Length: 430
Image (cartoon, rainbow, N blue to C red; front, side, top):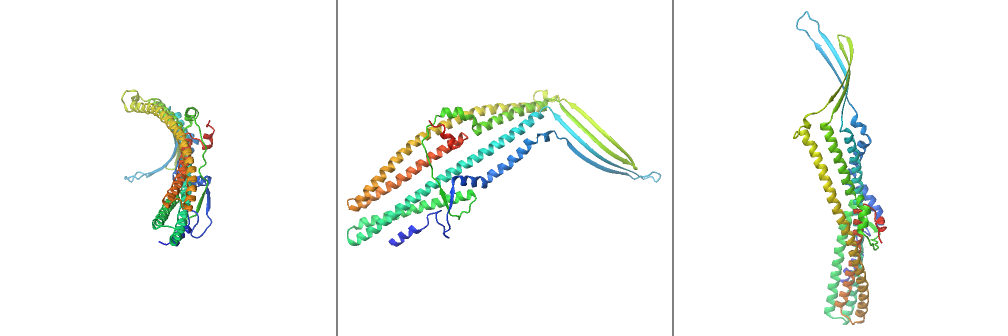
């Protein structure tokens, strides 16, 4: 394959940078990406619908004591068989109100309010998790773009070196093996670049689709993982932020709901209930109008739920068992949350050590490459050793970006686990 074809590869557009129509690339920041992700998330939109339903129920608790209203009417004709009797007709119209009250109603209303709080909490948590995932995808793509740039540079160097070796080969200054090594190096550099470009394209398409953007649109991501060393005390984080974790708050709400459900079940099944009803009706019999108002009130006290093992008694015991199990779940959830926070802080500390080592390796590889390049051009180093130094530089840079990305993702995950923004987490660093 000729050198011209290699050089032509340099004019292939880097994925996401230059479109076929040479349209200007859209610059996308992390904030814009998070906004678009929220706007186009189907799951978040569905949660918003459920949240609105729960909000309406919580803001209109009076609906639980609103009486049922019914309207009825009818007509009746008596057609005699005996010719001496007369046909009679009658018409009725009735408006009725019915209201049933029981002692567990206040607890039912309390649970409706708690259900709205839980829905709001779940919505905010889903929104925060979506932002967290979008941020991780954004920074991962930024790191991939940097890798594409590195591999493009490596391919350019390999092609330039191949061109120099071709000329030197024609002049007799480079042997056949060195020239073949240069060709193999150029092929490897091209393959690595193409693979990285394809991976970047595929991931970018998925990212744009999640944001609701045209997958054919040219997009450039503005921003890269900015990291700073965090020295965090897990005990302080647990003490000050554990109670604000969404899952812990949601479990407390569930316990309160189950406690209300238990009390409400007890009062509903074993307490008295009051039934109020009223009807106003008009009847007409052979054109004689008559209106009647019928009002009734009754109080009933159930007996069978007080008898052990009956269905009413079992319903109360089931509600109590759910409440007790929720308390155990809260204890277990708290222990797991503490372990998760400690694990994240340990990983952050260890990953920062990896970042520092990767930075040192990158600096060393950069200097080694510069010296190798000088030696190769002077003719004191063969191509294989020079290519090894160049590949070590590429690997060191990739390792540095990967370690920085891993550190950034850990910080984002810890902030999400503590229900806070990344900037708030920095305040806890010593």
